[in-house]
Length: 255
Image 1 (spheres, rainbow, N blue to C red):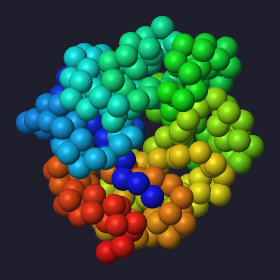
Image 2: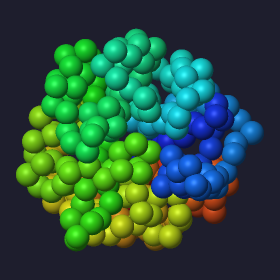
Image 3: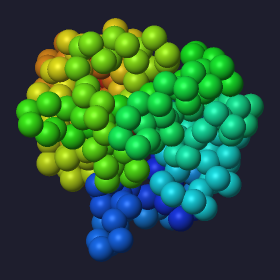
Image 4: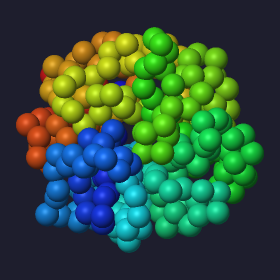
């Protein structure tokens, strides 16, 4: 179990947002935190703490400069997502990203577009690709949601589909959309399912708010999954000390 940090960018600033409030014309975006520091500040912090595999997510337009700044500060240490296509993916790899992260580009019109996925793999190679299977539950099944998590796809997340999608990528990233950013605890059933279904490095995001939650996460996942924490962390205005999370995970989940 590794701690995978995050840098979420919105309007060019580092923020923590309730992701499920993005993309709605009739609803204001709920912002948990807006940082006084820029993206490179956090990238340098993660580099100093030797944390790898953290993700920089561009939430909408106007975030390219901030993303590039983070990649330049920690070349090879960060992944980047948000608006990635087969046309621009190599640009981010060349700028220092270890991987690019995609959801909506390969899941559009409610379906997995295998042609787009293959074009992406051809452009940068499987070793540089992270597929984000952020999902919500419907009819007691998990389905990938796209377009800032506003639309259900027909792609059910289960053992069979994960085994298929893993053939195209190096890692998986899964946000538990219904709990992400709300600091109300993790989606335990999803954690349990992902631990059983995945065979490549997989990072779970959503709801972890304490060291006790981390302990529970490690137990439920058998230490198999990586974890990212956003709004609950002290560096993003939360109560959970960043240093304690880093130390806990580096010690192999020992308090």
